[in-house]
Image (tube, rainbow, N blue to C red; front, top):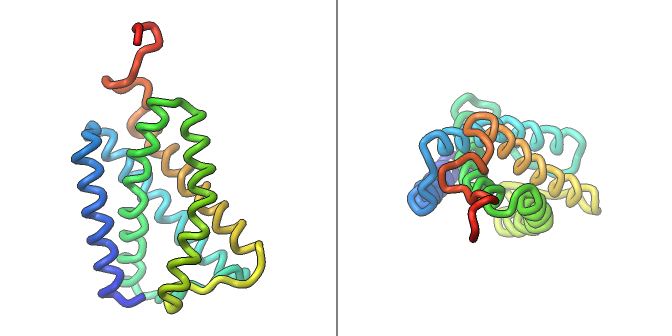
Length: 172
């Protein structure tokens, strides 16, 4: 992935983040929590890529320059931040069951998405043959959702304490 391609991807995800914030209207504390979740998952994601490269599950070329690593980390953090605003809404509406269902769906949808990207842009990522890369990729997606949502919850509080949350004692 070139620096220019990385910047284009970051800009696209930044537009998505702004749109999600605009339409979901979260509090500023919730937005900060989602960005902090993205920051934490940026470290987790780079670690997962490095580990997958090291044990031969996939090959993602990372250039170990300060500029590229900063852009790669920023892209990772910005691309996952909208997920936590969605998980906040799901947790507020459906509780832990909704969050668990979302995590399962992401674990199922994530690997085919990555395989499609790898097939479209083979210079960005190559998967090893077998089921192990698929399972590792799915586990990485589970970590992305769980870690980011947990960090957001630590900073912004539980979703049921938000002003818009339904109260169980109020008749629907």
